Amino acid sequence: MNPRYLRMPYVEGGMAVGLFGGSFNPPHDGHVLVAETALRRLGLDQLWWMVTPGNPLKDRNNLAPLAERIAWSEKIARNPRIKVTAFEQKLGQSYTARTLEIVRALNRDVRFVWVMGADNLKNFHRWQNWRKIVGTFPIAVVDRPGSTLAYLSSRMARTFGHARVDEDDAGTLAFRHAPAWTFIHGPRSPLSSTALRSTAPRVSSDAQSSL
Image 1 (cartoon, one colour):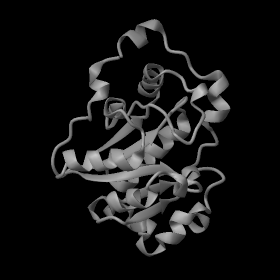
Image 2: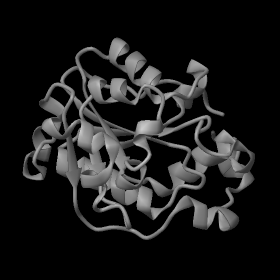
Image 3: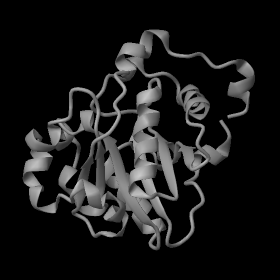
Image 4: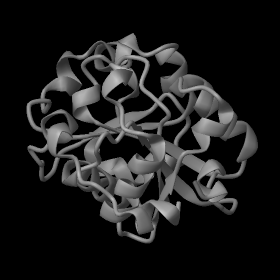
């Protein structure tokens, strides 16, 4: 694949940047809706669409090759402020806590927000060093079908209830110190990668050769 996908996207000091990670196997309009909602409601300059090498909590046997998932993501994420990247592959690991630690160390003057769909909130406490994730960057949780009440019932929401930022103040999240998180309501797409996997879009050989 093109080596540029193995590097962190270019940023400048003072920028507000969303970090949106996932296996994207395959990516779909629900992912795009989360990304676009985050860009708009958080007032972000960029959003890094981080295609992970693999998810430790998911079966890797059904995981499409990284180059294919990058190509699918480039095809669907058309907003120029969305930067598709797979730099975690070069780091040689896929644990979010460690990734965020490295991102912070290399970009001290950038204001990052971790962005995730509400469907991930239920099991967030199963992620390795999940409390460390909450303490590294502010977190924006974007509504997903069937997960609207996750901000009330999840272990993360209950543990860090004191750090919740009112949704009306979501635009200030990037300028707050962690722990800080908000839940953003809005339009929801019923699509899921699991449902789409059997009909995942195929990328032409020309498209793949450009990666």
